[in-house]
Amino acid sequence: MSGTNFTEERKWALETINQAVSEGKLLESSRENLTRWIEQPQYEQYLPGILQKLNAGEFAELNDLFWEVINFGTGGRRGLMSEFGSATINDRTIAESAHGLATYFMQTNNGQPGRAVIAHDTRNRSPEFARLTATTLAAHGFEVFFFAEHRSTPELSFAVRYLKCDVGAMISASHNPPSDNGFKAYWSSGAQVLSPHDQGIIDAVYQASEIPTIEFAVAVQEGKIKILDDSLDQAYWSEVCKLSYSAERDIVALFSPLHGVGETSVYEVLKQAGFD
Image 1 (tube, helix red, strand yellow):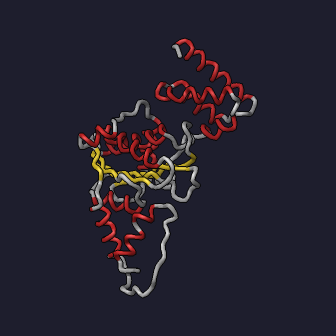
Image 2 (spheres, rainbow, N blue to C red; image 1 turned 135 degrees about the vertical axis):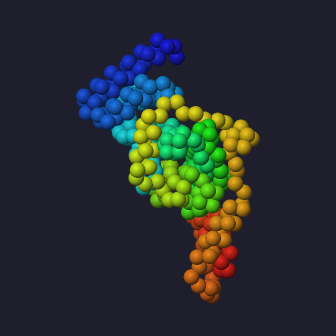
Image 3 (cartoon, rainbow, N blue to C red; image 1 turned 45 degrees about the vertical axis):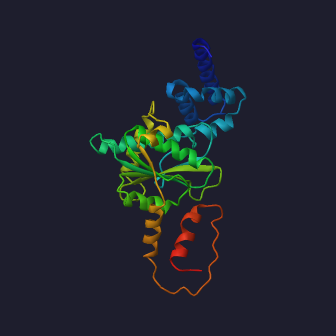
């Protein structure tokens, strides 16, 4: 698409959006967010998809995609996955989340990056989003520790403290439906970020323009991303077993992770604790 056509397409898109708002087909908040994604260069790769939906008159879906800038709540951001949209979980909003976490931490640390650990669950696209988070943090200069396979959220919290990391990120949407995913941010305490850190991170998200990145394989080769081995799993299982209130083991237990991350934690802990 030439520069002239690109400008004309943008002009047509904005006029179409304004008309849809005047007819009650689009929310005012959707217009604000769509306008930003259409006008600002960091969103240029998503313009064809937006134009396609505008041309098809898919205003209800555009409202779902753009009615808000997905906020930080209960320690992070979570919502419907899509290919684009300020109100959904996608490559851009995940990268913005990682960028916001990195930027805000560096603001509190005299401009210096720190150490981070990244994990993900078994949801669709979780491995992809975890790698995107890791490469974004590594590009900001963080030393990144990375779980190559799915792990539980409590193990991520443990890893933050065990590895003496400054921040952590878990790609998960907890109890949300399978269509959703999310980005949970952790501070050095191993707890999810709370006020005022959550607002500081989201402020950095709002200000994000171009987001630095690096190829995952290159970052691993250069030692910027370190793949964790099972020694951390062993340390976590051992620590959990220390919390047992009783030595009684006279039961036979049946456990199913239901395709979830409990496969990597609950089962091993039960075995090490002496249950059959």
